Structures are given as C-alpha cells and as structure tokens.
Length: 110
Image 1 (cartoon, rainbow, N blue to C red):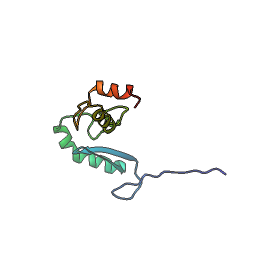
Image 2 (cartoon, helix red, strand yellow):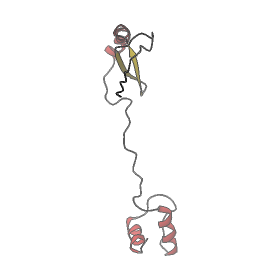
Image 3 (cartoon, one colour):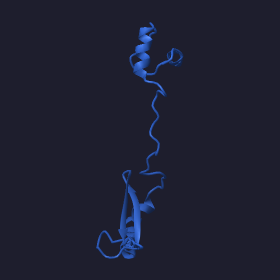
Image 4 (cartoon, helix red, strand yellow):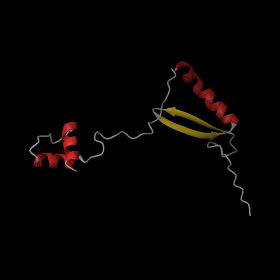
C-alpha cells in the first residue's frame, strides 16, 4: 500500500494557508516565519524603511560547522606530563607541551 504525506504551510500570524517561508535575522539570531503572500508583502513593506537605510553584510547568524581543533593532537597531555616528570623533563603544568617532549613520549612507546 502506498503512503502519501502532504506538508501544508500555515500562516504563523493568521492560521490561513501560507505560500512562502520568510527568513530573516536580527541581532545574530536567524528566524523563519511562514506567511501568506499578503502578510509576506506587509512584512517586507514594514521592514523596507530599515532595510533601505542599512548596510548589507554576509554571514549573519551563521556559525562554523566545524568544531575547534584541540591544541594537542593524538596524545593525552596529562599522560605526557606525568611521563615527562618521571623522566626528569621539565614541562609546564598548563599550556602547550613542546613537540620534542611529545616525540620522546611517543618514542618511549606511549
């Protein structure tokens, strides 16, 4: 048996049938609202005074899809610090660990 699914847009202001989704952003927050053609035109008209006086910028409300990379890659900083202390190698308690120390840690089979 076949199944048919319909999506009906409803005007978020009136509850009537909507014909368009309007996307906009304010203060770095993006919004969407489903509106009839008439309400979409009213919204655009209401905002036109501000839009005409404003400067265009790109990327408002968008965030990078990538998470920031950790400062260390492929090793546990706490383990490197503990190993280095046991070897008499001085490393800071916080912050970046010198690449030479990480290489020695790996060469030791860790």
